[in-house]
Image (cartoon, rainbow, N blue to C red; front, side, top):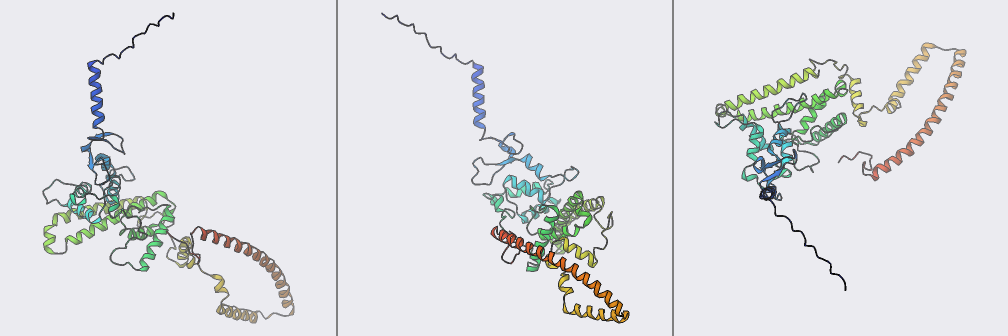
Length: 400
């Protein structure tokens, strides 16, 4: 008879101590709060209360708050200059903060926020452009609107509107040329985040700074970009001031605002002039003025550097033109009359010409063979570029 195996009792889990229960309950409550009243900022990575975030206007956002906290958004809005000094919010820094917050940027609302921040007669606490804009964009009429619904959100436009003054083909062509020149010199688009209506003017201004001394100095290039941004801000302030000075009543009513805007513009221009002086950018403070830039040779050199084929001088057509042939023949006849060669001179000339003909014939043969090879390679390259849709059938570059 088999011996029965004695069954050992299964040990039971010891009841948790009261202190452990309290800890577990606290952890459960904290985890329950995460995603409801506490959220993690995508920029600083810290867990913060919902009140530390802006309310999200994205209808698809289930959390109800923005991706980054208010403090990180403020750090983006208050950008730093080249020396690391904190700057007042400008249009580019405000746009950057709004993009991370996924809130729309409207140029009209931004201009109104500038006026509101500069108005010292309202009796309200003094704001800056950022605090005024973020307050205005949080109003009920902007609910459900995100970054893509603003003026900068639609990036599918190939050519931005060039203001209300002139939108002709000539202006569009100049805009494309200036933009291509700037990107070629810097290697990137410095005004990618700028308002579309401002880009033509900004590219045009920056092209004026791109001389030989500037393109050889990276720091000077960066300073030129900063100067163009500052000039653009100054131009916007001028527009606002002109709007406030349309009538005598408007001037009296907005005298404090106009005074504040004038002071702001003065500070911007002082900073701009100091930056130009420190980097030797302006003509007055230039360390190495470009000589001969306005001569014909200088202009041709500039056009050649810009890779404008249509502006290259075709010396072959000039030298082989009928008029040039007649001039050459008349010049040769005049020289022969002056020299009046005899028989010995003619014999020497024939011998020299025979040697020249032989040398030039050899060069011609070599050139013809090189031209044949280049023509074949050029045709192959054109076919390849057309297959990649980089050029059209006329050989012109396709800019997307």
